[in-house]
Length: 96
Image 1 (tube, helix red, strand yellow):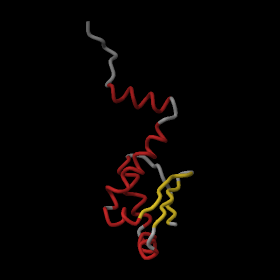
Image 2 (image 1 turned 90 degrees about the horizontal axis):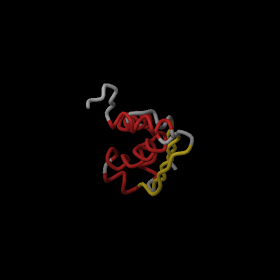
Image 3 (image 1 turned 180 degrees about the horizontal axis):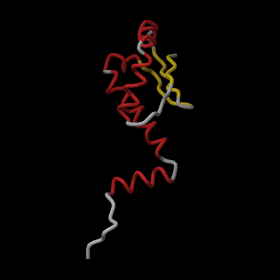
Image 4 (image 1 turned 30 degrees about the horizontal axis):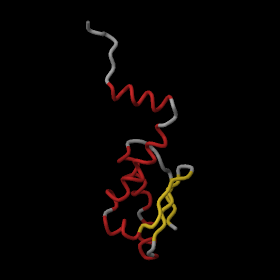
């Protein structure tokens, strides 16, 4: 017997995550996991801590020179991270 109102499993999972308010934390985890991939090994090596609070990504770095250089490209980094996740997860980055 064929159903006429069948939905793809991916769509059902997204609906469930949205309904249970789990989509936001999942997107945050995806963004944090993508930091190393998008920024590369040299920058990741100087990253000591990474977390998100109130749509702000906090990046603790062990190099002051790298901190200054990343500050100049802050808007590009925000855009790339959000595009990679496919949602607006962060609106600001603070380099500590």
